[in-house]
Length: 390
Image 1 (cartoon, rainbow, N blue to C red):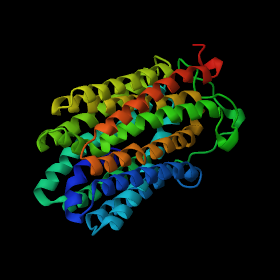
Image 2: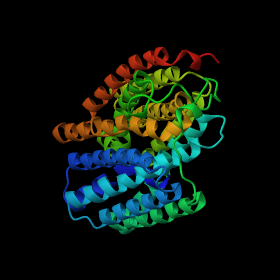
Image 3: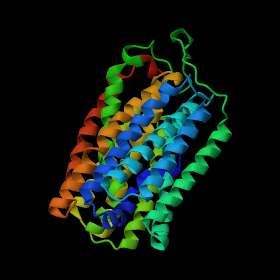
């Protein structure tokens, strides 16, 4: 998962690719948005593969797609080839890889489901924290094309290694309603009721979690995709911007892990409410005191709020739905993540092209956090009563 997490280090690629391909900031924002859209498509394709091919074979497929996408990106001559390579192939490989990894873990007999799912989703920003500086160094040494080529090799080798470790004889079998297991967390986890429409039970709870996640992701993905550009616009030096981006992605990784850990101890609603409040505080800080240092702190807080929501959402799915459904429910919740990537991050790129500023985008992020807080309060009312008995 970690090499695919370099999708979150996309901001490191902004200026070099804009320069050699003659693209605008809004062009690059659209590439990132399409990459996350196709990433979500890959996540939703992965559950369809269950019962048809082994988990190891799914990871081989992810390896080939991701490596081919970065190779094509390294040879790109314009917007179209970059979109196909990074936006389509790389995004698709990452999505297949993520849901497969999550489903493997959730079929294991683990006790702290919130913590383990927080760990899985933390690997993406952790990969960006490590990969961002490596990409930046590689770009400085050999140029952006060579850096992308190196990353394609890393994706191929690590994914094939993961497939070998996983094995090629594990096939996820569909569970019948009467085989559902009964809880193993303080919330009473894993089984709520037989499958309903489109294979998912309790649609009101599903939609509420998806909306809370969407609002946090809109702000968080703007930070992840354009943090270098945002920091430069607030007067930060390039070295500070790249270093701060690594710090921000590292803190998001820690927040994802913490968000999962917290839902083992508090309700999902409480964690989500606090996460949006934390993110809102960062947006307000940056709006009141716009300078390079407060930009680092403010963006870190906005990103961490998204991280807390991501970890708690994964933990919530593990607790409120049967474990055999985890990949299905989680991948569909990530449709909100996909829409989020096509909303504020793309809009922020357009606003920057028009005004050479991210001020309005920060204000929009703050409004999203307020709406997220209101929706998070409603979560507790939608959880089945037997989930709150512990």
